[in-house]
Image (cartoon, rainbow, N blue to C red):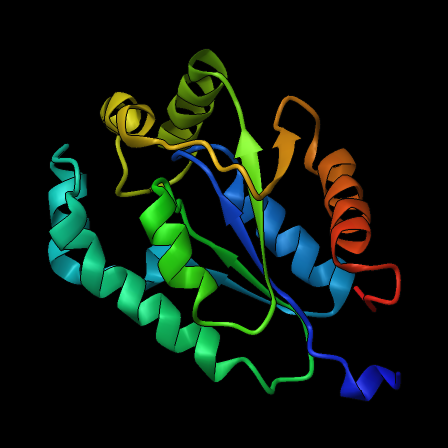
Length: 180
């Protein structure tokens, strides 16, 4: 198979807030000569307003957001390069919807315990102006349905260690001819 004929997978980095989706996603995109898209950028203003006021989103709130991400993923099908998307994808139904948008989709679950996530969220609050407050961590863990068909990566390692692990796991899962 010619590499130009290969349909690159859409890699969706999933997990609760503060698990490192954006940091890992940017690094993966650079390593793979791909494009990174942060799901946070696709939230409607009403969702961002709710979260910034400490109000957890519900399924209705997430519907238009997931629809926007599906449109993005669909638009990338013929891009000829890897697409990396950061999206919490906390429920199985959300993952099913996103999986239906691409020919090849690989979820990577960035898994961490509550204490690690809380520490990261507190650090992020001190360094960045992010709309998601640490107070929403428990609501994220409450609805998290851990994935069965995903690559699972422990977030206790550094991004420099995690990214090669993800690339190796994607190759193993999708086949060694995967040009990722």
